[in-house]
Length: 326
Image 1 (tube, rainbow, N blue to C red):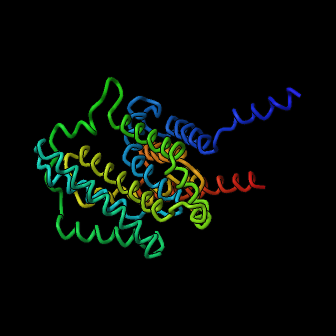
Image 2: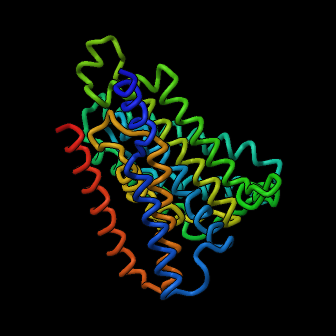
Image 3: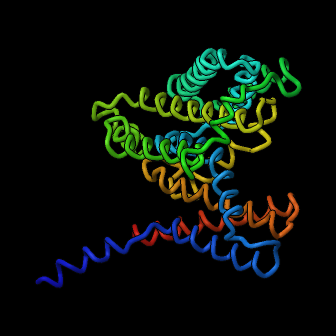
């Protein structure tokens, strides 16, 4: 009798999400390949620091993208909102610390408007999220390119602490990312809003019949996504000491954030997944970037390899999900 009780408990403890096995395999393969064919030591502190730095910007926006995908939507406007944030923040600040509060107020207000607009287009106008958010993104790009052609303004030295500061031995960006992940995870697991996100993403009609205001939940998820895009834009402006119209689109943060979320195990249809899987997906992308750079792989080949890896990872996850259901 005791054996029957203990066996299921042991299996639950040993069950590790497949995404973390994929991350471990990616890191191990990168280490072996770089040791054999690359330059330097892949596990050197400088390389590990590069992985963390590359994870921060993509990770912040991917955490917000997780909310949109969990609710059964997505957001292709984040890359353009990142650019708008970086440019507007540095343009308003003009290197003056006293103008930082005004800049923050303006960019977060813009993010709120964009998030609400995306949510309303998806819920009230019943436009497909891909088309709605892409359209909003193109509007942002048009307004941005019509107003700015190059780097605009600058951020004060004190604001650069966001990208280059540290508290003890821990870099501020790492603390920022960790705090955001913790808040997002607690929100999804411990709050009514988080429970409603899973309910709406699982079955919007059933959620509505259960008394959940599904439209408000979808709009709220889009606002969260936009706010993390704003935070990413502020981080990049701090890191580059200024903002330019191409900052967000050069990083392809819209497509890569969606890919990181899906690779991390969140289902595109919504209702299943979470931010911890997204973190693993982001770390996989960052590890691949550092590995490719140390192996001297060209940018075009890098894109092909990353695409193949994304397809393989999602295929493995889908196969594993069918096994569980079966």
